[in-house]
Length: 460
Image (cartoon, rainbow, N blue to C red):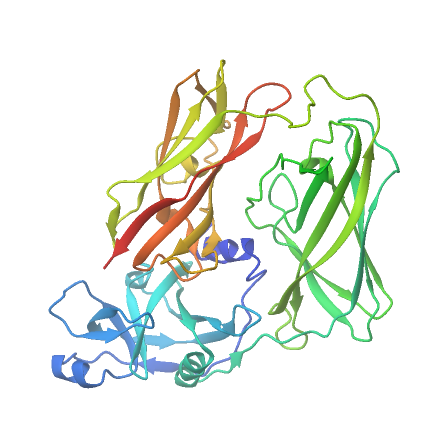
């Protein structure tokens, strides 16, 4: 798999971009290489692509966050195609992608700065295809700024818009009663009760032990039931589904991938299903709106209570902590993250993984997730995608790392392997880590533990 394929697949995992990017025709736009004058940049840098520099003696241009970006020479790029489209329903965040003839110097994600109307935009992503095409990606905040860039590139800005859908949703259990520990299946049923035909994406989050296009919460005797699985996924195959007025979409899913259902009684369950509505016409794979359908239902488990049931459920004293040392990291350096699993049980526990030290195919990231990433105390999770992991054919499978009583296991990685919506920009970060795949005994053989937030700072 080439780096471009990995790039596109990573976007598909977060639900933002579920398929191939929309294609917008663009006449060949040539930006020539010219000399860079210090005085010219200070006064008014010309629109175009510049090499980003770490030389603080060079002139700067203001980025959207107010920081300064040092500009090297203006680079020549033959823009073959470009896209500017919204990434949220509020049309406040935009994604800019430029396709150009292959240039190895463009493969570095932070190699260039796009300057338009006096504002600099950091390159947030890159890729290439068969050494024929290079891809440059940029994150833009604000409708006006997106319009300025679209005008410079000669394309139209693609906005989100409401599909005017009206859908009736139900979750129907396969049977009225289940035995303790039995596989619990339910059917999702969506009926288009509106007057408009709608299309949405099925898939894109199913390359995982479970289909994370679904989400469920369950309560038993007034207490929330522990999720036995993981929300992590590696994208997956997706197809478009179209519902005309009156038509029905059905899909079956096993709730046992979320909950154990090992205690008798009634479970009150709320289920949701993520919908990325699709454009019709010349951009059939463009997400025009994101939403969820939801339904509440009941699952009944009969039989006698188990010996370990209890009112409070199972309590497992296994902890996860994280640290970044040093706590201040430069923007062009790795983020050295250490994740530590501690065992407070009287017997050993086991962590299933490929590696505990960084390797080139990201084996150490197996069963480790950065589930919540925030910058400068602002609301909104910045997480976009986890690292791609291509296991070499010479590796037979995961290994079990034993953690003996009162001992710990440390896993080292580079947090930059996880992708953010706008990149690892300078700022103060708070990151919550989850470790999955921890085995205790036959009953609890795959549970997850969250850490307290890990804090560090990135500077220019």
